[in-house]
Image (cartoon, rainbow, N blue to C red; front, side, top):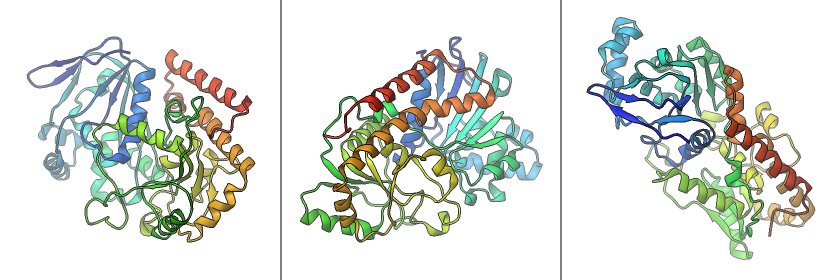
Length: 402
């Protein structure tokens, strides 16, 4: 794997590594919320399977520059003039040519970082952008200047379905839905088969009704119920969202993988399930489903009722459907525990399907095929490794649980 080379000049940060064919832009130095770790895992897989230079913008706060740029764009009605009038924070100048320019963002509000890259259109043969989360509420006319930075891209991918048509219309560029993936090699319980000492694992947004019932169930049964105890950040979303920052995304993903590999049941619900105004109509699904399946847990929860979900989770019992508010969750778990053969099949099918279809390398192939970029030899080797591992599990007698 190549190493990044930074050559600092008086006005620009300059990059030159002739062995690299992809320039990856990552927001990992600026955004460290726990929810973003999944995306940085994707970047790590890309970095490990290709010849990549990774750029990590260092601007701590572009809020003032964004406002100046927005005003300049409004007054001049010209993106080019606004670019010239507003200085970039830590500008980057590309010295070599790349086959692919590939910025990855957590949300459209990070797109202003592209203002710092001054000559990527001249130095990169092809370009693609992946934005993991975009909701209709983000598409206010006042935010359109964000999406103008995407008008020179060959293809745009969104990790949420609801905005693909709107973003394609705003940018004039092809926009395709691409759901999250998973580092299945990290999350797979095979071949180590750790003991599943956690009976029920419930992370992130949760139903207070279901949580209360699980607490009571755990008091009267010899089970280990694992759940978050953090306090919601901020006041605006205090009743809706629990989140926190992490120091090292790789350490967090390893911890999460080890937790779920040791869990018998894992809760997974549709995105923003407790925000009825946000997600009642435009339902989405995030990484929880991919994490639970790849780790071989039996997933329970409320999935979205959209075709896209059943396209990616189309095998029997991929998730045991229960209402978000389930006061009878103890009875549900007790009933499932009596169906050992069914649980064994669920775990195996979850892991095998994840290895064959939901590794991040599968998402990379979708992206590369859309813009006619050939996969690297390391990427092909990873695909072969995933198929081989899935075949071993399929043919084995193991139950993926101890």
